[in-house]
Length: 326
Ligand code: PBG
Image 1 (cartoon, rainbow, N blue to C red):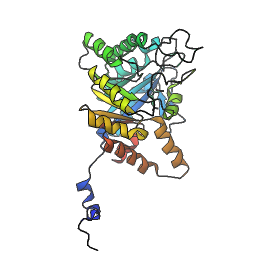
Image 2: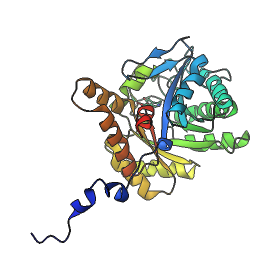
Image 3: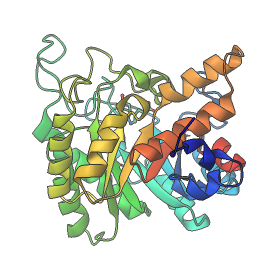
């Protein structure tokens, strides 16, 4: 054999780490945390083994558990005590996320991001206020422009409670711009915006909707979240958010959309985030439970691959488990 190029020379244990192109660190990870105003004790989330909804009184303790694994950032999701058509508990000063944020930012050194969306707060489960007649007519859903003001108020209330970063996830046109304007006008210029810029209408969110009780009561989200068929459109969506002042650009879900992560990485200079969503977590757990694959190895490989595709930070339910092994 006359082979001059033998890639295998660089696969020995000694040299592999030296030539490794991608590495995963606990500091790349952000852990989702669910705070629930309807309970006084921790409630396990069945479809996401190892995760639970915690009452406000346990929020600090929960975040400290995350911190102990080496993960230094959390994303807070709230389950309010009551819901209504507008989602008014989303921007309440004494709302579940606001209260948890206040305590966590006062009592820990963890970086606090908050999910800004109305779907957990509206009684119909959509990500904004409905157009008149939406219940009867499948062509109608969320009124984009009427929703913007409510999202901006929500983001401002999170910032006032001490959030370091707000993360609008409702896929309303113009959401980043109104939030930036509202934050700047209320002296929160230093609060960052991580936009769920390219968020797809995905069946991989199933377990989350159990966890956060945010499934739409009728219809689906295809009139505002993106069509899984489209990648060029993601670039356009991301560009709009960049123009409106987004600091970090998120692609969601992650594993089935690595081409999109890669494209966003190539086209923009901003940090790119990827959300390794609930369904991606649940499917590895389900297979591991059957003994069909190794949870630890597939979780690590998944996260490493999302980074390799171009993500800088990873929002993942595996954060604590993986950080523990790094
Ligand atoms: C709220 C929101 C959702 C997720 C994050 N924020 C649900 C949805 O859009 O239906 C999904 C997260 C996950 O599946 O892990 N808009």
